[in-house]
Amino acid sequence: MEITIAEFKTQFPRFTPEYLPVYTSGTYFKDNIVYYEGLFYKVKVASTTNLPTNTTDWELYNDSVLNYTQDSDILNAIAEANVNFNEGLFPDKATAKLVFMYLVAHYLTVDFNNALGSGIIGIATSRSVGSVSESYSIPNWILNNAGLAPYATTGYGMKYATLIRPYLVGNFFIVKGSINAD
Image (cartoon, rainbow, N blue to C red; front, side):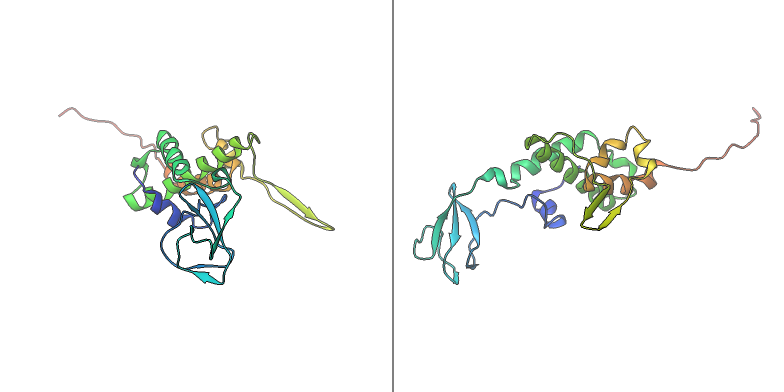
């Protein structure tokens, strides 16, 4: 399945970690951070349209590209998702593309979790703040399915599983009959 980095970013504008803020020509406001020619810069005036190298408007900012989602991360996740994706399950290309993007987001999240050394991180099924708590469970139709259970480790994977579910099950009928060789 083919998708572009731009399509992915449009589908998931608030992905975490956020996308690398590569400088593009335009207006920037106080405290905006950009990545330009291998360095990070932060706006120190109310607004600017000047290049980040203008020291009147910008200051160097200490950060690392490893704190951001980069285009190369997205490309790697697209390649990983293509290993496990069957475009032929879906009725049209638009549906396939939407479902595929959730699979890409799942793999991207797994890659970040692995890079952080946190191993497999599952979905939190309960949380408490003071005397208030809430809980929920992952549906058994996901957990009891060896093919779908690995997707229960991220929210994007859970969404992927729910989107492909209708295309994985079907109805069949057994009809008694015979064939005449006429």
